[in-house]
Amino acid sequence: MIDDALKRYMPASDVHPPTIHDAMTYSLFAGGKRLRPILTIASSETVGGGTDSILPFACAIELIHTYSLIHDDLPAMDDDDYRRGVLTNHKVYGEAAAILAGDALLTEAFRLMTDANVISALPPGAVLDVINNVAAAAGSSGMVGGQIVDLESEEKAVDLSCVEYIHTRKTGALIIASVTTGAKLGGGTEEEVRSLSAYGEAIGLAFQIVDDILNVEGEEKLLGKSVGSDADRGKATYPGVLGLDGSKKRAQELIDKAVDVLGRFDEQADPLRMIAKYIGDRKG
Amino acid sequence: MIDDALKRYMPASDVHPPTIHDAMTYSLFAGGKRLRPILTIASSETVGGGTDSILPFACAIELIHTYSLIHDDLPAMDDDDYRRGVLTNHKVYGEAAAILAGDALLTEAFRLMTDANVISALPPGAVLDVINNVAAAAGSSGMVGGQIVDLESEEKAVDLSCVEYIHTRKTGALIIASVTTGAKLGGGTEEEVRSLSAYGEAIGLAFQIVDDILNVEGEEKLLGKSVGSDADRGKATYPGVLGLDGSKKRAQELIDKAVDVLGRFDEQADPLRMIAKYIGDRKG
Image (cartoon, rainbow over all chains, first blue to last red; front, side):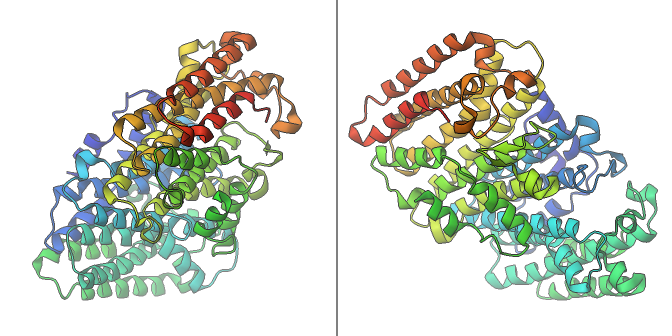
């Protein structure tokens, strides 16, 4: 459903100028798990909200996530050749086009969230509030802020609070925004939004801890990228400060907490419960 | 007024993480002419609209313009060491921080345009419409689209329609959006918005033609950057296809046209008339 919506909303890969639309499309359909848009929809449904009306926002968050991956992979950043088993954007289109494809995906996200053709069923005030949350989560005190501290922490001795700072911003902030976007646009009460935000906070951090663990002991075939790259680069990771066992324990505590804060919701929250468990169990 | 507003709206340069906010602030206060925000305010005032209520949008467009300059200057793009007489962002902060500072400025623009603390005086529907226009102007069929065709056209034989395609998107699209943002939020009628959009189209193209001309025969001291760099890179320019005299003639025609389409407005449009003349006469 999300793939179909992305195809519907995005300019086709042959729209002029072709290079930019081709490069945008390449990374957008390069095998992402669609975790964030699924979270947005599942959160809306949890509070009794709609699915179709939320789709532009779910997709916009996936565009922002995709842009961040393209820029993270650049030679000046993590310098990765592969992601999800396929060549990274700049390996296919060159650095200039990859930077611009990221820029365009980020911009397109905000164009989509304000497109009168697809958002008219929602109250404009709520839409503005949600866009503001998404932008704050993606910006200099959120995702981008986490990425710069991540880069600056390479090859340095870091403590748990620094690793947590990086992870809660680089990965956590947009995951929380995915959940609260669905909860708010789905018509959730303030308390419901707060519970779901706590859920997002817990799974967001758990997701990144599991990522760190898989980078130590995962299988390259399932991951689609190199194992051991964090250690090679002296990255700030949970296993680096808590060890593997300590990291696994922490991830499980967060998954348990995520399921726990869903206690107020009935079986409509089952997809969110399943996602929490999937994050704890994932191998790739 | 715009500098003060930018300082008020933006996170201070020492907000954590400091590198990103310092890099963002550096380029934002590196001597820009503030043409776009001035156009936004002047357009609002031309249709009898306010000034203060428009400031967040005027500033947001300046953030988008600044991000585009930081990314354009990167080694993978135009590889410029100086802009406006000072070192480019990546020469001071490194490539990774410069890419992220651009990303953060773009994101911050959309956060600012949806910030309930500063936009509450405006109707939410009109705000969404304006954000949508700005995003479309900045995106893959606008500014980013123009930039990629610009890069792809280096060292190639290009015709007038290709140069016009690049210039109307790379520079023109955001200038038109600056004008229409002010006109719409200032409460202009559809016809007024259309007239002002035509004005923006004319001065936007004229601005870039003059830029091309100055790159051939301008004074480096006034420009703050190297003269002759376009020719060195085989860039697609107006002097390249029309010659210097033909380019000057075309720029003047566009300035005349810009003043002409303002005919329906009284002296409230005088600032816009002065800006058109300034664009035709500028030396740096």
